[in-house]
Image 1 (cartoon, protein in one colour):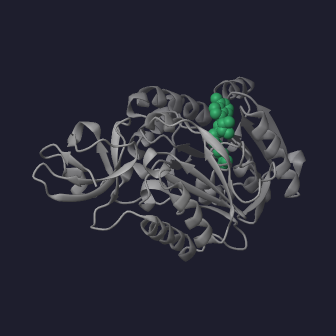
Image 2 (cartoon, helix red, strand yellow):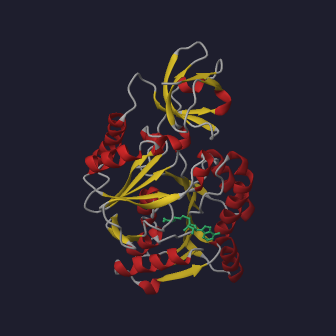
Image 3 (cartoon, protein in one colour):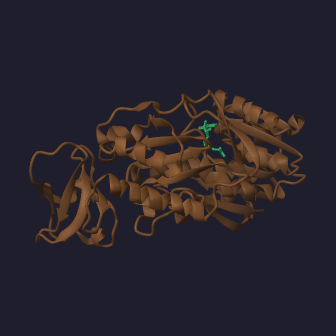
Length: 394
Ligand code: SAH
C-alpha cells in the first residue's frame, strides 16, 4: 500500500478523528495512485494515523476509512454498513407507520461518500466520492445481504461529484426498475416518491420529526407552507385538522405529487391551496394583499454550499424570514429552517433575530430543531449537522 505523508503538525484534526485531509496538509504521497485508492496515512515523523481513500483531484484529498489497524476490504464495508443499519433498527425507525428512512449517512456513519435511503422495497444510493466508487460492487452485494432488499437504484446525479472529477450518473443497479412513483408511509401518512427523478433521492427524509412537531401546532389554524416540495408538512397539517394550508413551490412536478398525496390520504382538498411560483416573490404579493397566517413553514433549499456563499445566503434567509414575520397573525408560529452547511445554528438564529427586529415583531424561540436520528451527527464530524430550525412564537 502506498503512503500519504502529512506536513509537520497537520495531524491535529486527525488525532481528534476528524475524517478529512485537505490537500494543503499533505507533504507527499508515494507511488502513482488512481483517484480513490486506499493509502496509509502517517505523520511527518512516520507515525501511523490510519488509512484513507486518496483523490488528488479534490481539495478534500483524503477521507479516512479508519484510524485503527485493519484491512480495508469488503468485510470492512459490510461491518460499517451493519453498524449503521443496527442503529436504525435499535431506534425502530422503520415500523408499521414508517417504511422509509436513511440507512447510511456518509461520514456520520463512518462511510465517507456513501448515502443510502430505504423507501419500502427499494434502496436508493448515492456515491459522492472517487473513494467509495471503487467499492460499488461490494456495497451493492453487502446491502442486499444486510437488508434482504434487492431493488437498488442509483441517484449519483449530484454536482458535488464534479469536485471529485466524477460525472453524474443514475439508473438501476440491481433488481426491478421502480414504478414512476412508489408509495411509502411516514408517520402513518401515505406519500408518493419519485425515486428516479425526484429531488435528492426522492423525499426529504430528514424532516420527519419536524413534520410531527408542526402537526402539534396546526389544528384549526391557517398554515402557509413555503418550499413545500411534495407536501410533507402540508399533509401533516391537514391530517391534524388545519383550517387551511397554502403551499408554495417553484416545481410543478413537486406540486403535482403533493396534490396526489392529499388525495391518497383522503384529506380535505378544499382546505388546500397551491401556488407554483417563487417564494421570494409570492411572500411579497401576500404581504401586499394583507393576508395573514397562524402558522408559517419556511424550508428553503440550500442557499450556501460553501462558506464563501454565506453572506448571500444570509441575505436570502433574512429576506424570507422578515416577510414571514410580517405575514404572521399575533400569537402566530414560525417554523424556519436552514439546510446550508456553511450557516451555523448560531448564525441562523442571529439572522432570524435580525429579521424579527426589522419586521418590528417581538418573537421568542420555543424550540430548536435538527435533522432526524436517521441522519446522525458524529461528534468527530460536526459538518454532519446541516439542518437547523427554530420554532418562533410571536
Ligand atoms: N419542505 C419540503 C422540502 C423542501 S426542499 C418537504 O418537507 O419535503 C426545497 C424546495 O424548494 C424544493 O421543492 C424546491 O423545488 C423549492 N424551491 C427552490 N427554490 C424555490 C423558490 N425560489 N421558490 C419556491 N420554491 C423553491
